[in-house]
Length: 134
Length: 134
Length: 134
Length: 134
Image 1 (tube, one colour):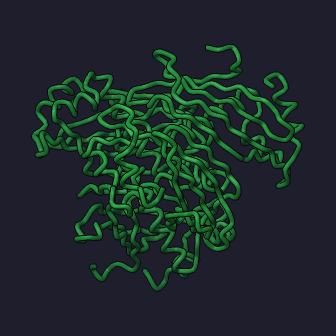
Image 2 (cartoon, helix red, strand yellow):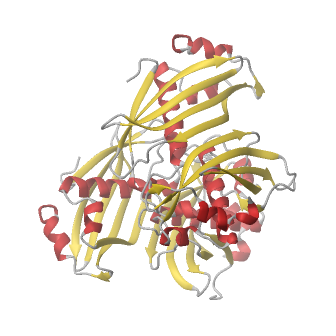
């Protein structure tokens, strides 16, 4: 595991995520990435439910994802991330590896902005929460 | 089409709904059934968004579904329903046919109760809305 | 845990499984049930991939599912099953509990038949595999 | 509609595609994009089922997607594409608009390569099929 990652979690492929090719359907990787970010926020102590209570709404702006190896039935992945801040944008670097051999499965960049009471915010509150991870 | 049905809508299979067997995954039929009920409520003039505004929350209690023929890539289905009321329960009889030959695909019974401001209601308001279809 | 169950597995709710009501969408429970059956077959030593290699194709015939409590973001479920054989039909009794308090979430009956090289089989080979669980 | 597009199809939002925010979940847009490509290939006369019979396997390499406006319950989208070839890579430019006002919803670039009997191919056969659209 490269040391740049600040969080990782294991996720099991569930057979209903396979498509007619017998491989995990491409859209499911966005689910895995989202699940990983939510797990990370929970670990940091600021789960999505709490964000919403405080009127903070993280909004996905952009995803760039490269598909390198297809996951199959029975596979377990290790989903890793680190993040950086660029002005109001939070960039999540999210990579997924096949757990058995740490073969890279997908590499991605996910850009999120924060709405505060419906308007784009500078994200300072969020940056404060994530200060140890930026 | 048997005359007992009060609503029908056509739905296209989308290839990502197939699973590794190359047939539509069983769970997707519950999506199709739900989509059909929502289309029906919209047609009746009482869409889900409006229910929620009025504090009415339809809650699924039970689904009984028989799988007769598998849908494949490229198939279009005709999804039909009629409903009856049994006390506080609304029973949707929902059948799906393959459009090309009207071969039965699934037959189902879906039981829904209505919460009004969080408590189970007798459903009289809803029965009033659906009076022409009961 | 009631002793009748022969298999159980824990499954985490993933946030993308919630719908606009903020609860797990009803169709996802069929995914959970399927995932549980697949885990069970794997544990028994006869995973789906191997069935297919041997020309055996388990086909879902019927699902009856009662929804008792809704799962929410962050919930973990314990998904349990036991099975019985009725002629060519294998009936899976599958119940899902909320892990924290073992509150019943769904109760279901899932009927499966076995195709062997495309034709309905008596399922004797499968019954042999599952003999310790029937 | 800008003239650069060579194909467009309308797709209805289905309510189960909404997430707990009440908007279409981000991963579903990859489903919409895939569905659009499949519809396009079908229209061109070279559906996926036929590709597979000929040993051709289109493999997704990369997706870049920008999220501009969120789709809601009841929305219909117009999903458009045009394509170009860069060596062995086929780049699909895929944009989705809200049908009512043609507001841009997502903009994306999708890179696909063709495997022929399991090995990366130059894609000449496919280029020939799509020659009127490149």
